[in-house]
Image (cartoon, rainbow, N blue to C red; front, side, top):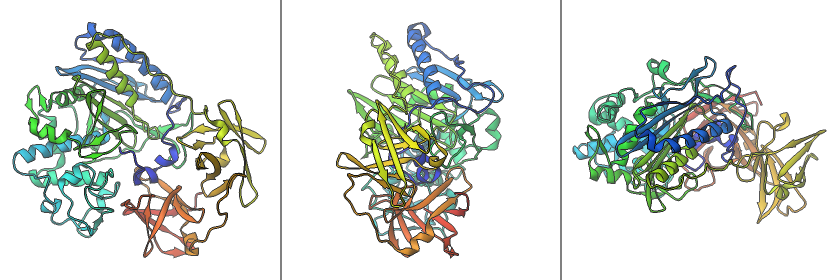
Length: 580
């Protein structure tokens, strides 16, 4: 997924969960320990040569899974010759004690976008698709309300269309117009609906369902016969059980509980492929070989270049990178890397291909762990393989990240913060620990990215505790709608805002696990969605996010007894709930 805060992340608890939180321990999803390390290996090629690297990698993965609380993991490694190793760890079903196998299906999420891009480039070579043409050429019924030039296939493929991110696919219809936030090509804004439209475009051109198109054009030519192009109930027995935070409407803390996630059928271009470690190895090898597979080319060299040519700057998890067609592309130490992550309701995946070195890795975990992706696993796997190929000493495993309750700059936040209602936040720094005194208790704060923290106390469980600085000094703190400031705060203390906004504050919910719930509240005179600012655009419409060109929109329904009863976020309906 992208690095900005998407509407889906904002309204499904991703923002609440904390993007920087890297370590969790103590998974409680059944009577079977989720930490059991049970590697099952298959299709190991050139085993003797790589065995030291495999042993070191397995040791790292065992520790890594304990740290993040992953129930299971699947891993594929590949070279130019094809699959090098498929391995599996932990449990596909913790209650039944069923271990992950190399042929267990895992949902790969947005890595599916590269499958869509490959199929479209095939169509381009057949003269059926022109990425420079308006998408209205292929989908003439589609309605887009925009003052900007037309959106092309190129814009959708590169996430530069200006469309919002997580519109529910069901609303794409002639009577449901879409909209844009900026001129196509101006900005990178990750848009799942853009790839859903590309999935429709595939169906229109080939006159077949998306599942048939992807199977015929990508899966079958690669020999990926166990993989599935769409997620249906029929494949559920072969799929690993997926897990997600038990409480999706609040920050996910250290030792937070997971539960079996909702099962969802999905047949959309943005992310509907599921695969096995064994077959993802062949997919990796195809990219390593510039579109060539054992059975022949998937795409030509020219088409491969189109897919992997950078279109626009787009950081990959904070690293310098650009986006092409369905892939992030970056140059690291003279090597060309092709990468993508995938996040589903209950799966987290990563694809990492070092085209220059001829090596690739795919990893997937059957859990959604608050923004986590197994990037560290794939990266260390490639480091080990490169060292082996180049005859160098094997690198040491990445050091364990600082535990969430270790705060290197704890002293920055120490002191007393006061609110206008007389309540106080009393924080003390002791070494690399930051403590909050609440009543008779002292609670160690856990980092949740930047100047955000999780407080494991019932009075603080619904929101992260956030701090703001004036230059480098911490001067104020926020906990949901509550605002606190210390003696260094020198800004205004009262704020004017339209009184009708008070009717919008509250807790709203959507029953889909993709969207979950959102809390709307006032913060320093501004209406916010879980702390993300809402900018009024007139006629009861608000823009979500600080960027002036953000395409995400939010509106409220009729007010009854001083409260708005419904909210529509980028087209998705939410209803007010009386649950705090």
